Length: 114
Image (cartoon, rainbow, N blue to C red):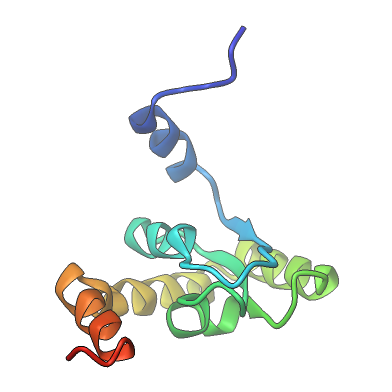
């Protein structure tokens, strides 16, 4: 049996989780972080994922090997739902900074074109 599912089914499953953990060691565009904010899903992530520190600063660990800190944050999210809810509401409100227009404008500015 295949473990692959179509994208809508993947998101239905992912949205049923209580939290996500993304300990990525790459300096990258943080698609998972953006998706988590849109779904109001708490996500423990690393500082190397570019949007994590802005959208989920309370749930950002400095390095992917901060496993103990990541687990402590995950446990706090599960145990203190009010705290976790406040974090995801703030993260979702900041998504306006990631519209295609604003993202393209930042890219052009960074390239010295704007």
